[in-house]
Length: 405
Image (tube, rainbow, N blue to C red; front, side, top):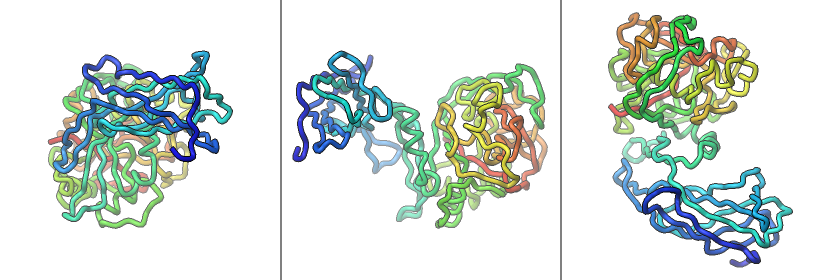
């Protein structure tokens, strides 16, 4: 390649994805150091054995979900870190059986002679994310698709941008299974306005939940088909009745509300508010302490928004996500759920986590999360709160969920 200097005495080797039958293979065909030195090495590699298949969109063909990774070692067998401290780096989604070029950024003082770079391919988590383009196509509909995940950290970086807080909506898959949730006190301690003792809940099928609370820009784009808002602030001052169109907890959202429009424009039927259990399972991401930071709130500010003035909202995604890449579960806004108010024990009320509570107090509903002005106690992952379905204080927001109906 013109303007590049080929590395001397570079060893190549190839691996097959661990333990997979007939998995794709990868081979490095060339390594070139950019010259003059720009702290970049181009690694050209060839992948074979990746098949193509159709997704949910008839016009959208994708490849099997494989990623290429590379590990470098010096002549003494020691792992070489890149400028970010990583000893293994992922190039990204493999584009079928192909030849691609990865860019590696080692330390500027690295002596590459005698270096060995080992490539491998591995199968990522398929359909880990659901992405919706909120700009209507020529038919007045929303294009949507599933995207895979190589590592959670890479996906956190990919989606924590203005694009996915304004013109796109991204939801994380929560796999079906039985999950632990509820108060870490292991008792029926009342958590404000509802009991939530430690218990197991069954998620009978996969579901998706937005990685951010719905933003002002997304709200405006769906309802008005336009937006000039790019701040990424979560939508506030919105009631349960406005979000669902006064639909009952056990019925589908009305056609003209934001959730109804999302269902209609995607030609799907399954976008709604999450149930309390759906919200908590996603928020915990396997965590069983009071907060994501542990059973003491000392470091809670790393994950949440604490002690702000009433009505304050902060741009989503500015704090750490949980282990599943879901942001803002410790505050910013209260988040509406689909459930009617019922202050009994959630362990008894919702053993099947996808089933909304419909036999509660009419005209009242349950909130989760907490607002940025609340104390740490309100931010506990087990906290339950209730208000009327018309409540629309400045800190009342919501997060969108989806599961097939």
